[in-house]
Image (cartoon, rainbow over all chains, first blue to last red; front, side):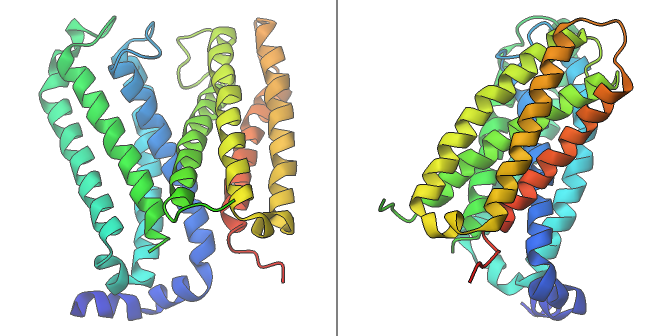
Length: 156
Length: 141
């Protein structure tokens, strides 16, 4: 807990807590909207629901740079909000569940990129195989959970 | 209306998920007006499918938004930030409808005013999200 106490007593954390919080939180909403929205667009294609006429590799190539740019923004703004009350957040169940779901989404993505996506040439057009559809589904469930538990943090 | 404690965060979550999709659809449309993003798809086809998605999501946002107002009317009705949000929303809807008409003409070239308007909608959606969050912080009393 010493590190977290130190963190929330830094002048940056105090400034966030005392005056910047609403602006940081609003910016976090904008970034997370871009992260979740672009990911859902790719997930929907992977599950075979939308953008069916578009190559999966093309869609991913043009969406995911936006996802990553927005994710960096969401991590920075999220980190600033966490600092403002580090000890409190670190013990809140919704925060810990949200972090677990982020980890789950990350592991799902790594497995998809390293294993499933290697064979994308065979299903870039048309209906993706079960492994790709499953990856899209897991991703969507994780990110819906991230948004839900993220919002819940503000209520406990 | 009396709502249980989890109802408000749950409705807000649906509201946020819908705005995430709307923001992304608007981004895809705006990028396409600049010849970027999913440029492999002709503008009129891409705009039709994503602007249709935007209208559908606005219905979801209106329904969840009205539920949130009903749950906590005093927070919203007397709040100038809420009215700012609604004005920005009307402008964003107006420009999006105009861009929808423009794209359906299947012009060879997209004129500069259309590209600028498309980029401007992104600023409006960001402003709408900021205003939405600030409804919770602005104290009218």
